[in-house]
Image (cartoon, rainbow, N blue to C red; front, side):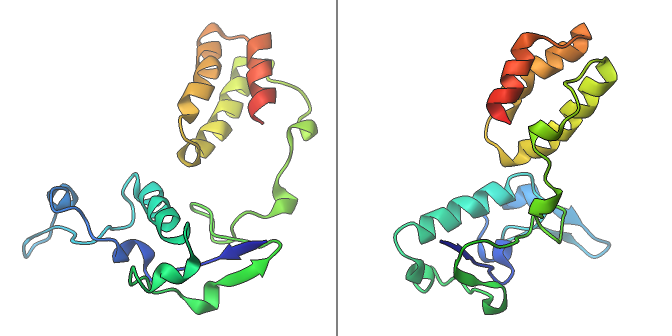
Length: 160
């Protein structure tokens, strides 16, 4: 059973740490400004937002009142078995029909170019998986050596 929630201007409901406000500074023809709330576009806003959501919703969903979080009811769903949600840069979200499993791959990378292509696809997932660069290290080393090894095959099978 799943629930999907969407907050009104979610990032903008999270106050910036006063020590970090100056790091968001930008200049206009009129003045110098900085954000008092978390803006879109910073590197770790997604992770920060997710940590807050986990903190809020872990004990009980009704605590949104305690944290003064305003949810968008038209984008919330409760007690559903499946659903689509926004994925970084994709307004349609993840569509299961478009996801291809490892079994659908014709073969493992055989050339440096194929290895670079695979690594590029995997890097795109990196922002969503903690310590993902540790998992990709053997692939980057293989690009330098220009060959695929049994170890990389094991890493690929283990992770995907």
